[in-house]
Length: 223
Image 1 (cartoon, rainbow, N blue to C red):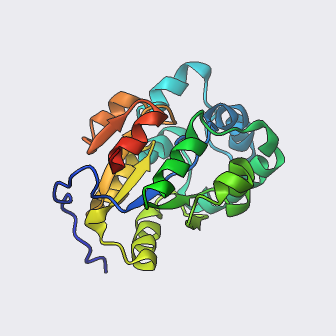
Image 2: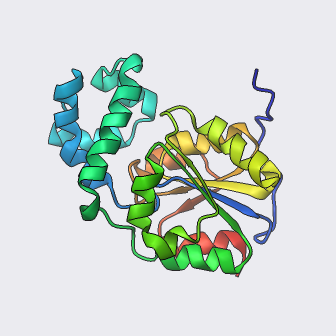
Image 3: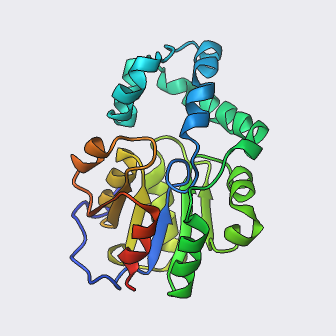
């Protein structure tokens, strides 16, 4: 039974966060165009609705459960779909890049003594390949292969592994579920507007910070 606090963390000064838990796809890696490019092939394989070009912006305003209902994705198929998507990304890995400024940003956080972690449904192998060896070395902990709704458990594990209190940690992601997972554990939450979800959908969830540029991330940690 989950006994973690569901309240928002107490306000911290800008230097208060010691742990940054990043989502990967859409937050650090510019993978949304790839995702849209392969999605209908995956839909055909697993028997859920295709996405028309005029539906993309609508879906970017939905949370994960709304998207599943809209596309009629049975929940029991999610692990199979996720594994297939990871294999497709491994196949196409050379065409996926980090957002501009990500390597410098992660290096800046390390220079400030911030512990950097990544929690993602993607595989560690895919993430490390896209990051490259130098940037991958800036990440202290990887929580990979998380299920679509498994981020709370992965976030909790990061807190336990690092020994950093939830109130000194912040989750940074591009989807509503990233905000919800951080909030459930009493972590801070920052949402980025350059990924999978629309900025207005993220703003409606009232994250602690709504970021529009990669360069703004370092400002969460002072400097």
